[in-house]
Image 1: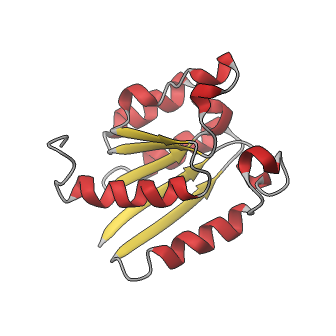
Image 2 (image 1 turned 180 degrees about the horizontal axis):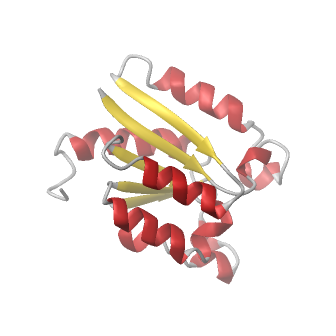
Image 3 (image 1 turned 90 degrees about the horizontal axis):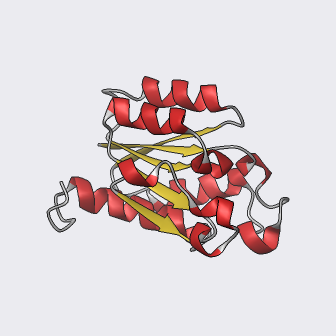
Length: 151
């Protein structure tokens, strides 16, 4: 059984309300339900976590050590300045995929830096809610050794 931790950072609890033209109209709860349905017959356990607090996200990453096979993270604004989340992900050495609903590389300059990207096995940007499904599929392929020798 593949165990995937999906972490969502600050303001992602406001999906569907906050700037729907950028982030979509689906709430975080509906997104989680859709991902559960998507993985229903894939022998996957999804663990969802969202927090607006950097320390809580770090604690969740630490608690995943030796329990989770892969992390999918959308750290929201913390992506762009949290060395602490970078260090937490690095310390647990769990393969990590970075996801963003929008393409951070064609937005404001301050959003174009990611402290997660250097330690992630890959990133998915700009595909809206489908980015999470793409990340799940990439996680399966990566852990199955089908990712072109990346592992």
